Length: 146
Image (cartoon, rainbow, N blue to C red):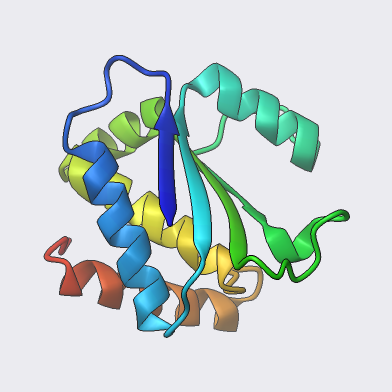
């Protein structure tokens, strides 16, 4: 199950189903099933989460909280993969900055977060190349080309 939550009134009507479809596609690309919660929030909340969990006191676009990294939740038997938090304001800003639709940016952030939950990272150039190729393949398959 993919649970999308938000308290934002400004979220487009199609955002929640879009995020669900993208996360499902990312998991399917790795033949993985499991549950995830996606929070679409504002800059203030994402900054609070970033400061509280990563000790980086600034706004970011997406955060992930893999269940397998948690102190209390290690390899949960119920199939819970973790949480993704997306900053809606940053998604709007980045869509404008990169010259593509808000839908494409939300799709990108959902894929990026999903891949982190699946163990992908971009800390080394080699890992970044692999993750970027995977993201683009999923987005292209869904029709979100650059």
